[in-house]
Image 1: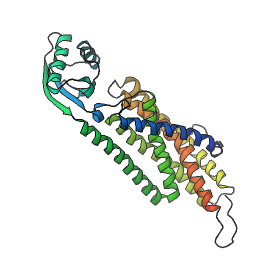
Image 2 (image 1 turned 90 degrees about the vertical axis):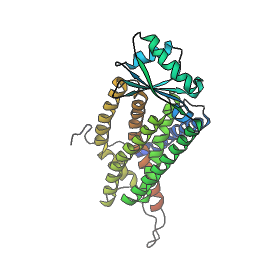
Image 3 (image 1 turned 60 degrees about the vertical axis):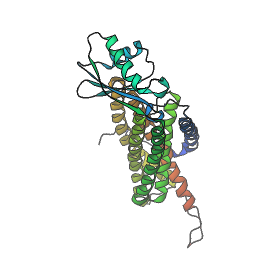
Image 4 (image 1 turned 60 degrees about the horizontal axis):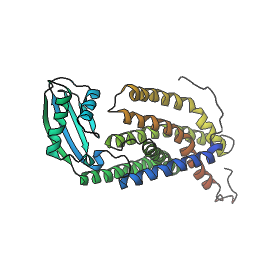
Length: 313
């Protein structure tokens, strides 16, 4: 397999105190973002706040850029656009604060397109009102989905490796989720169902990288390598460092392509992927591994049941 860095000997574990401080700051911002999200003070999409959804059909293809110009010229300031792949269709989502009733939206939205482009035939296929109760349910379902995924992770890692590794994986994954909430909140991105999709995607991606590191740590622990746990953990991380960087860099380049050329619809989604890939690699090295090391040291520093002597950690 290709090696990007060759043999390295970085003291990652020695920097764990610094990384813990950085991770704590990120996590606190993420928690604040979640609180603001439930208070409705964050930039929330209509999936969570409620609003009106109007599906339109045009007699010819219409670019998203032209659609935005038409809606702005029609006096509609806030909206979301979603392309329908077949049939020259477009889904326009209007937040509840836009104060457009269902019937009114069905008249104003197509009129804006007809006014902006002469001769364009617009047909309203459906109009749907998304109530605030649905938004509340989606917010609650989001937390439940993340909680279930965390439980699944700790069960799998505990079965695959050890309970201490399961705790480390959950802490790292939760850190990544909070980091994505923090980034979205700080950059004013919109919290919607697409963001939740990105969160769950990155949780799985980060877990994959963490498992690779854990597998090498477990392998080296079973080899009874000479030296302290500190050295064994550092050796293990350095041995898979090239693999982690190459894999993450490949995925990162694909996410950059989506971010730059993917269009407005998936712009925020690709932004979440970029953030998630970076924090996923970071957490595997500077969060998951140090947490497992601390738990291992705590267990091994206890008095040996036979000799009565502390085990060297």
